[in-house]
Length: 109
Image (cartoon, rainbow, N blue to C red; front, side):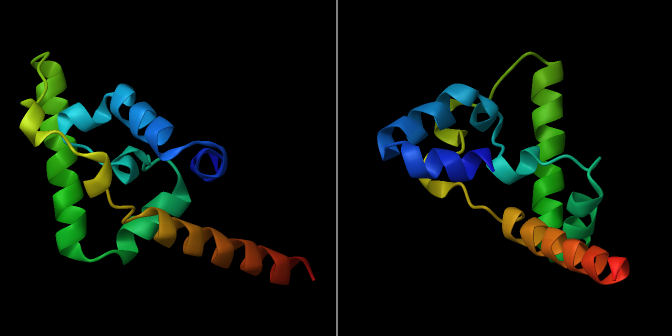
């Protein structure tokens, strides 16, 4: 939701700046890598994505944890760039939420 608000009010330069200042890209992470598996909707979305995409996500998360434990970041040329960051999970999560809300609506009637 915050991302949608930022898209509406922020200039591309401001979005790029906030992306870079957040710091997760220094570990090679993408925005959707930050979605936590404590949310059942995210868990279901992860179940639905292809295995290779899930494996790539797991690699990025493990590498980020190792870097953080070593108090290091990737070399700058390996940082995730704003232009290269792909929302691979958010659309699936939105679909899962929509389906869940529809099921809840049908169960109320």
